[in-house]
Length: 470
Image 1: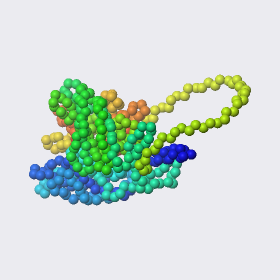
Image 2: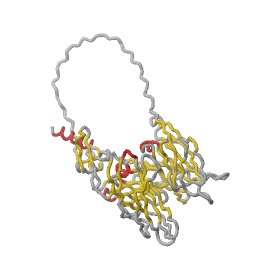
Image 3: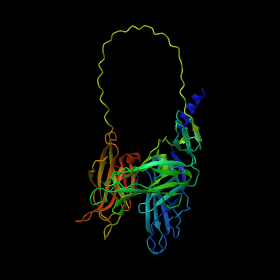
Image 4: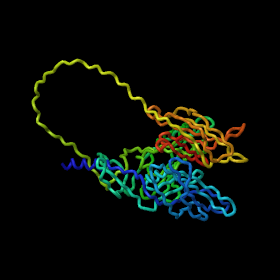
C-alpha cells in the first residue's frame, strides 16, 4: 500500500502544471544596457517612451515616459508603469529609447517590440535586444503570483506555490528537484543557414561563449568551439558546462565568427536568458542577428520543467508480483466462421492551413543621400536544407522609413508535409539603375509566426519588420 501511495504521489506531483495567467495588473520598471554613445563628450542622456498595441492593430497608445538620466549607457529608470494585461487581446509593448539633446532633435538610441504575454509567462522578467545596439530589461515591482492546478481536480488550485525546475535524473531513475541550489548544465551547439563570408566556399565558423549576471554588463568568457571549415550548417562536438544559479538572472551571449586566415569576421550573435533555456526543456533554437539560427541542446536526459512542489528525492517504485490461483482450462467448442475481408483505409490527408499575410516596417535605415530610402521586400519560403523559393515582391515606395505595404501573400502551411518551414524577408532600397542596397535580411519560423497569432515583429539592421494576418 505504501508503494502504491508513493507512486500516486509521484504522478500527482509530476503532472502539476502552471496554469497560464489570462488577466493581471502589471507594474514594472525598465532598464537598458550597452546603449550607443551619441554625445561627443561623455555618454548619452537616455529616456524611454512606452507604447502598446492590441489585436494586431497599428495604432500605438502611449503608456508613459521615463525620466531622463544624465551621462548613462546603462540606465536603471525608477519609473513604475502600470498595465492591464489581457491575453486574448494579443498585446504588444513598443519601447522607444532616445538621447536627450538640449540644442538639437533628440537622437534615437533603440527600439524594441515585446509580446506582453511573453513577459508574463517568464515570471515578469524579460530581456530584449534593441534594434541598434544593447538591450532592455523589464522587471516587475510586485511579487509574482503563481497558481498550479492538478489535472482531474479543476477545483483544486495551489496558490503561491513555487514553480521549480528539475535539476536532473539521478542513476536509478531518482528525480531531483532544484529551487535555489545551483544546477550544472551540459550542452552542445549547432547552427543552420549561416551567411557566406568567404569569397570561395562556405564560412569557417566557430563560437565564443560568454555570460553576464544580473544588471551587470560585464561579459565573462566560458568557452570557444573548434573551427569547422566550409560549413554553413555546423554541429560543434564540444560539450560545455555552465553552473546555473536561478537567483543571479544569468544570460548567455553567443558570438559566431568566421576564421579566415586570422580575420575573424562576425557571422552572427545572440543573447539568451538561461532561465528561458531551462523553461523550454533545455532545447532552444534562436534566430541570429544577421541570418540563420543557433541551437543549444542539452546532452543529458531532461524531465519537463515547471513542477510545483518541495525539494525532494523520490525513490523508484519496485515492481510487485501478485499471484493468482490458476483454474484448469475448460474445453471450448470452436465454430468455423467465414473470413472477413478488411478493406485498406487510406491515411488521413495532411492538414493544410492557408496563411495570408501583409508586411509593414518602422524606422528603416536611410540609405539615400537625399531623402529617405525607397523600400520594398522580396518574400521567400524555405523548407529544410532546400533553396529559397520566391513568393513575390512588395510594391516599391519612395522616401519612406515607415511603410505599410498593401500586397497580400499566401502560403500553404503543412508541418506534417514540410517540417520546420521558414519565411525569408529581404528588405531592399530601390536604387534606380544601380545595385539595390540591403536594409534588412531576416528568417522567421512559420511555426513561431502561427503560434504568435499570425502577428510577429522582428528586428532589422535598423528598425523592424512586422508580419500580420491579412
